[in-house]
Length: 320
Image (tube, rainbow, N blue to C red):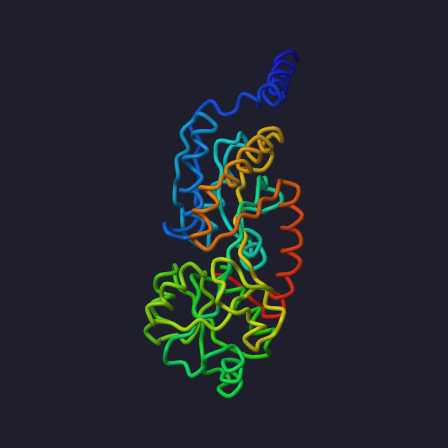
């Protein structure tokens, strides 16, 4: 009977605040569950070196893309709850459990929310061959050609996909969803005319628009943003007012990680994203710093889950 008692005491000591305050004492694995060049990857590579400086341990960035972020997320959900495996991801962390049946992880059970860092924005773009110069004309085109037009996304369950479905519900129109494995093909086929439209991150869309390869019709947000001050909102461009679908980017670690480790990491991230050089780098990528602590992030995730569950149910969305 003494051995289990000793083991229990050792476990309690290891999880005590004093032990957690020593974290970290070895390298940290920073997982990005999407491909290089995505918003998540940009954030990780911007703040990763800063974390190394602040925490005194190497922060190793690892891209683990696939299945709309599910592969990398599962790796974090199944990691030891010790703060040495963290992840930066986006809204799909609450979308995917609504769409994919039987996922081996739950965002509220198996992940520990650490901090929301930034918000990004999606713009509705169309190819040059689409006879519409604003959202009002595009909606009219959809209604005149029911079922004839399509929109692309980097995959089922991505913000681009869900925003497209939200737009369809808000406008009472239909577009065929064409999912790709990543952003490159999705963007290329809108430019080439194989697909008519896409909800594209602002920082990706604007260079294509400036080069005359795409037309931007409106921003899926309730106000104009500093990253694209000349782009009207969807409502301003003649569309409905309730297509508000900003993309939030947040850091998580494994569920059941001691709260003092989570709070230390959250405070470190808060200080990093508020540094002028970091904020400036993120702003140039179309991202706006919007820090939330663990409790605020958890509350926002619950609101987002409730909101998007209605869209998923109404449209009957399912992942494969």
